[in-house]
Amino acid sequence: MARKAEAGRPDPGAPLMTAERAISQALSRAAGELFDLPLAVSAIRERRMTLSDLPELLEELSLLALIEGPQETLGLLALPPATLATLIEVQMTGRVGRAVAPPRRPTRVDAAMAAEFVDAVLEGIEDGLEGMEEQVWAGGYRYASHLDDPRPLGLLLEDLGYRVWQIDLVLGPAPGRPAGLLWAVPAQGHFRRQPVRPTAGAPAAPAPESDAAEAADWARRMEGTVMGTQAVLEAVLHRVTLPLATVMTFGPGTCIPLPEDALERLSLEGAGRRRLAPARLGQHRGFRALRISSDEDEAALPQAAKPLKMKTAPPFEPGPSPFAAAPAPGTAAAGMGALGLAMDWDGDAGEAPAKPAARRSSSA
Image 1 (cartoon, rainbow, N blue to C red):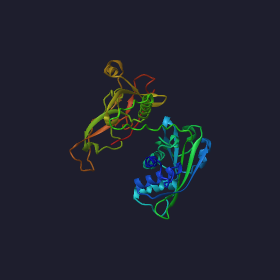
Image 2: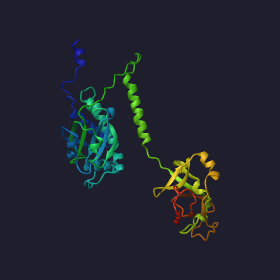
Image 3: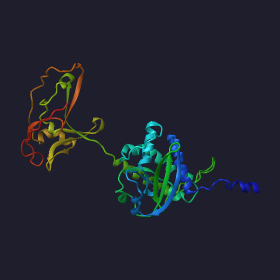
Image 4: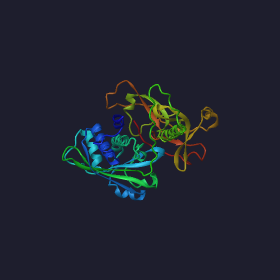
């Protein structure tokens, strides 16, 4: 009985796990496993402060990694210029040089190269505090985005109390390069410990009701992320297929004949030339504009719309090319901003310029 009771107790010789020890081990393990970079923590300090006091601790030109946790709470992990430069240098060259790169404003590329290190550190802290009360406020955070200026922090982070950890580091082999790191999370956490997995053959416990709410919340946030993605659209005026020898003779003043209804039959296309909708060219408050129309409107265009009177040039008469052109054909796409046209608009006054406009440009 005595032996069985002693088996479940922690080893008295092993040091007790604390938040400071978990943070130090997570940093050392992440740097070693990802980049084979020696990392030592020389000092670590915890402070409690409000959001208004947080920017005072940030070193200038630091990479500010926004981290997202449970219930969409946001925190901050700041990499000062020396730390960020070392991480980038190790990934690019495989070693730590003697001189530190001069401070510069971090870029998106820097954030992308540091995101894996940030996630590894946060995951290591969460695992190191497994089963401890500190995991409630330290667990569940991962990299979300980055800032290169601390001014928007007051708008992005909630105005509440924060646990702020200031960590002094030594990076690279001895004597090492002095660096630092700052980690700030809301003082009151919302991380829920994962339930113990059932053993083989045991009946699975019913899923809690909150799992459905979490799944719906994840779907909503995923939809917001996907719908917020930028999509590039192109308004194509007309496509012309020409021999490569003809294309090589293009120059200033070259005219490409277009159909008379080209401005009434624009095509709005997405990636891979995928046609999304027909459109018409006009203007809105002094700017060129497109009016998206339906396929039915396009089919009825010859009867319902007034024709466009366009002055076109005679057919191509290619001259001698300075290049040894191959007989293979090439394709040229004529876009709204790529061709110069001399035109008289006979459409509605609210959709087109009041007087003819003359523009000339060239495109190859």
